[in-house]
Length: 353
Ligand code: SF4
Image (cartoon, rainbow, N blue to C red; front, side):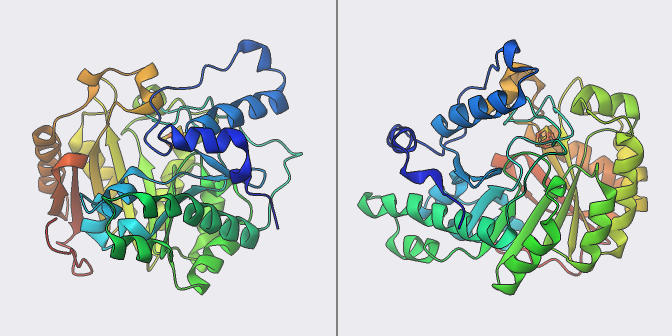
C-alpha cells in the first residue's frame, strides 16, 4: 500500500476550514527553489494540501470537486452529468501527476508552476493509486453525514464511486502506467474520463488498446503562435505533437472530445480555423468552453477575459456552420456548448438539469 496523507494534522485543519472548494489563491514558489526541485515539490505539496488536495503516494492526488458537493447537497451537477450521464456525487476527481505538466496555461486554475518529470522519478503502482484515491475520496465525503443539507441517498451512493475523472492537475499522459491505470478502472466497471493536452502522442497511441470511457484532448489555438501565447508550452514540438494526438482520435471507439478553453485576447478568435482543424481529427464531440477566472488563473488573467455564455454560443454556431458538427447541448453556468459530429447519434444527453 502507498500512504494516503489524510491523517496529517495539516490535512485535517484545511478540511475544517472549507477544503475542496476551488482554491482561492495560487502558489508563489520562491525563486530559491528553482534549482532545488525536490524542495520545490515539498513546498508545493504543503501549500496544495492547505488548499484541500489529498496526496496519494508520491505523485497522485484527489480533490473533491465542487460539483460533487453540490450534487450531494441536492443543488446542482457538473455539465458532464448533463452531457454524458456521469453522476457528480459518484465521481472521483484525481490526477496521477499533480505537479507535472508540459504547459503552464494562462487559463489554468491550478497554476502550480509545473515541471517536467525527471529521469529519476519513481512511479507508483496503478492499483495502489486507484485504491488510494477511492479511499481518500470516501473518507472526505463521510464528513457530509453530519451535514443536515446532504441528500442521504446521494451521499450513500457517493460511498461507492463509479467514475474517475483523470483531470485534476497536470498532464496525465506523463504517468507511464496510464494504460494499466485505465484498464484497472474499467475492470472495476467504473468509467474513466481522461483529459490530456495532447503533447504526448505516443502515449495517446498506446491508449487505443486501453481506451477510457471519454478521451478529451484540450486544444488551445489555431496557430503555433496563438498556442504559445495561451498555453505557454515547455516542449518545443508542442504544435506537431498536439496535432498528432488530434489525428489519432478517429481511431478510438470511446467518446472522443476536443475541448476548447477560450479566453478573450488569447485564443477566442478564428472559429473557422478551429472548425477546419477539428474536422480532420475525427473526434465525436467538441466542447466549446469559456475560460473561468478561478483559482490560480487569476494570477495572469482578468475577469474581463472570460467570454460570456452568449458569446460562447455565437462562437460555437460559427464552428457549426463551418463543419459537420452540430450543437446538441449546452450548460449556461459552465459557459459550455457541446457539438457532436453529424448531430451525434451516439449521444444520449439526459434531461436538462
Ligand atoms: S495543460 Fe491542463 S494542467 Fe497543464 S497547464 Fe494547461 S490547463 Fe493546466
